[in-house]
Amino acid sequence: MTPEIILIGDPVSHSRSPAMHNAALAALGIAAHYRAVQTTAAELPDRITALRQPTFLGANVTLPHKEAVIPLLDELEPTAARIGAVNTIVRQPDGRLIGANTDAPGLLADLAAAGWTATRQEVVILGASGAARAAAFALVDAGVTSLWIVNRNLMRAVDLVAAVAANQPALQARALALSDPVVAEVVANCTLLINATALGWRDGEIPLPDPPVGPHCLVYDMVYRETALLRAAAARGARARDGRGMLVEQGALAFERWTGRSAPRAIMWQAAFGEEPKP
Image: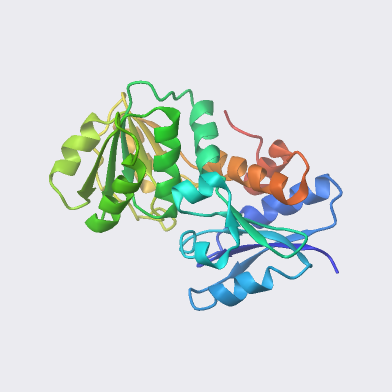
């Protein structure tokens, strides 16, 4: 039986991951198949139990399950344990399941490709989900010392700030509700604005209808397409970057865990987006 890797999430129909990973598997001659599996919260425990079967190499985990999956696993890599979110599961030969987070290094790699460095940055993250957690911990580990978490649910933002600020005496981390009038001033002063919410998958969805950004700011949307937020930011003169590079890099890091082989990143990009990698 052909070994499988699955994507677990709700929804998953939009995902480019199957095309990306199946192209990589084929390029390296690995007899395995990757597919997306729609999984509700109620279905998640049984889905994870099924991964223990020897027909599976592992899985990716996407919204909304990156945090909920943790109690169902046997062990976490140290980075995933710190972040409190998992986007990659690796099945061990004995059926044990190890959770990893490749979102964090994937984001940093793509920001570096955009010429971004952590020095003297004022960072705002929109959202407080698993993706936002990965971004917050990655940026703090990279050296960011000023961070705002902005979220519709203020308590989720407060919880993330408390987690990321623990044992970080030099870090100024603060939480805001998206509805707070102060958000406009904070965003206007930031040098990196990251959208870690799922808003942007449908046309017209935007977390900040008129983001007060300018040429001093890089606006990064984890959604891997041009979004209304990126268009609005570009119209104001800000640098705008979508999440395609992050998607490929986090996928490549997951692929290497499942297969033990170096991931063919250019092939993965071409398969996912139908074009050569962009700088």
